[in-house]
Every structure is written in C-alpha cells, then in structure tokens.
Image (cartoon, rainbow, N blue to C red):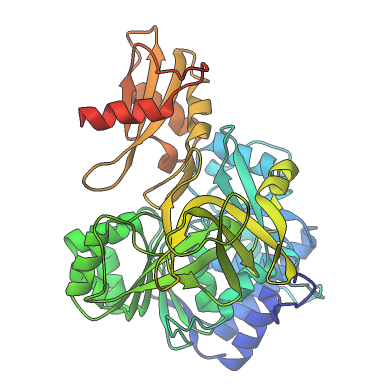
Length: 505
C-alpha cells in the first residue's frame, strides 16, 4: 500500500511545477494589494531554494519557519520542499520557551524568522527572511533532488501528555492527496480559498495545498487573530468560493455575519463538535453548500465531509455526521475485537490511506497509535484516533466522543494532561485537574487546583502558562478547591469532578 507512488501521486514540488506550467499567468497568491502569479511564485521559489542550499540546508533537514502570514511564508514552504527539507511551521506569536521546546523536540537544524527579537536561544542556524530573499534576487538555479512521495515534507506539533509538544511527521503523499478533486466539493482551478488557519495547524493544509496544487487562487488573511469585519470584506472582495472554518469561527459568523457564509459556494466546518442548531441556522440563511468535516494532524488534513442538507434529518440531541472519506482516505469504525462495527454500534475510529502520517517523534507512541491490521484482504496501516464513533443509516461516520484526556476547544485538539503537567510546575500549585465544561456557546477548560497560598490568582496562573504554552492551551477558568476528588484506587477522579460542575450549573 505504501510503496513509491502506490497512490499514483507525485511529490509536492513535482505537482506544483506541473500546475505552474499549466497556469503560468493565473494568480496564485493575493495579499492586500499584491498579486503573485504561478510562474512568479515558481521562479522565485526555485531561486530561494538554491539560496537555502548555499546556506548548507539539505534534503532531510528539519527547518522551522516562524513567519507571519504573508506571501513569503508560502514561498519559503515551496523552496524548502523543493530541496527535500522538512518544513516545521511555528506560530509567530508562540512564546520563546515553547518555540525552543518545539525546536528541540523536532530536532530542527535551522530556524527562518522574520522578527529577530522573536528568536529563541539555541544551537540551530538562524536565518533571516529578508536577507535570504535579497540573496535570491541574484541567484541562478541549481540542481534539486528527485523526491519520493513517501519522504517527509512537513512536521506539525500537537500537544502531548507530558506538557512538551509532540511532533507528527507528514509525507509528501499526505499533502499531495489534496491536489485531487473532492467530488462532494466539486473544487477546481477556478476556485478561491481564504488562508486563515495558522500554518502550524493541519487545518491550514486544506487552504494552502488544495489551492496551490490545483491552480486555484489563495487569498491571505492579515496576520494575527481574525477580525470578523475585515474577513467579511475580504471574502466578498476577493470572491472566496471555498471557505474552511473552525467551529468557533463558524459560530461567530452564524451569530454576527450569517450572510457572509453564503458568499462562497462551499463552507467546510471541521475540528469541533459544533451545535447542530448552528448548521440549521446557517443553511436556512442562503444557498451555499455547507459541510461538516473531520480533519486530524495524523492524517495530514481534512479527511471526510458530510453535506448538511436543508430539510435534512438533523437531530439536536446527537452530533452531526462527519460523513464519508475524501479520495485516497479510508475510515473504519472497529470494536474492541478490531472487527468493523455495524450501524448504531459504537467503536473506535481508525483512519488509513495516502494521508497517514509517517509517525511521531516518539517511536513508542508511533507503535501504539499506528498499527497494521488485516483489512479487506490486505495488510493496512491504520491510525487509531482514540475517538469514539458509529455509523448512521447512510454509512456516514458519526463521532460521539473524544478519547482519554483529549478535547477539542476552539478548533484545537488539546491533550489536557499536558496542561496539567505544566501547571504542576508552578511552585504554589499542590495539584490540579482540568475538566471540560459545556456552556451555551462552546466548551471551555476549567483548571481546578489545590494550593496552600492565599495569594495565588487566576491572572498569575494565566501569566505562568503563557510563558510555557501557546494561548489556545490556556484554560478560560481557574477554580481553587480544598481537595481534588479521588477514585477508590487513589487516582484523581476527573469524572466525579466533571459531574460536580454539571450539577452546580
């Protein structure tokens, strides 16, 4: 299944080269008043790739990019992939300690940065964006390696259980599969995508690579957190036709600017258990096709889609389906005996296919979560998602719950034991348990802690966490407790704690 080109795919640079030859004068990137065509992007990325080689970067090197959303970000991604390096995107606003942890965990040899003040201390090579671009203006093209679809292309970080980030290594085939047309979307080179997800998250791959590997147009949202009014104007002005949204951003649009959801032809919501009522409200407001989807880092990007139909059978008491797999993706719900579940039977969701990651930096974790099983007469490598799922009558996959200690908040998949681990490092914290609380809007994290200090405040804990983890991992609420509940065998009782807050609510 995973021999070279078993899926009929090519490496990302090969596909991009073909697309640029087919559509040289088509606009590839739009950023404010800048427009960059495919031929410009291709030529500039080749010159930049040669410059990176001059700086001793070679195939297999892991190179971090800490660059604001801008044309330069995608230019560097393409250049690094061309020389066979592995791209490690880091949020430009990530704290220095977290950035250093990421670089160490990833084994990065180099960081390319647009803001020197933001550079972490360490042994890695530090290169500056503007200097490299100036060098590329005098550069002639050199020789580049022939790449296999199974070579690593991108490394993404997810929150680990120890408080340290864990890295997921994605092959060229994982990105290349996004060059195939998705029948449900009917996407083509005529489309325009909005790039809004942070490049350090798998969700950004949907926008970037479904666009640049098909000849479509990518309009780039300004750096920083999205401003709803500015986004609405951009979606209209640039004619966005396919819009990917996190659950939280979808909810904001439904509540504040519902008409904007009907400017694009298709809106894809993924990464959250979104209240079905929001989908109903969105569909009633216009004629766009609206999809609920499933994406995960370990399968490189969006993995399945469910078209939510007007007048369809939407129940407000159970989650919407995440649908059926995209091309070259397989999804199956298996019971504890690893036998496929039937409709209505609950099991664990397993994912296979071209998008499957090569694994984690932690080999033991890779062996636990990526397993080979006999399936439909062949040996298939699957990723165990740890998500509980079932099938509906139409054989759509329906997610019914997250696995152990994993939750989705504001579109981010978070391992809450990692945040607990970090909070326990605070000198005044004796113990902590984090629970997810449901609110009328969306879930929030509540950090329940035990301390002997009467001076410890939520503000101080927020500041402490902000030095160690990205902002999206910081709980919205902190509750001081006299003791944490324990189970009969002396373990912290997260379930009992959750029940207590539900009863209080």
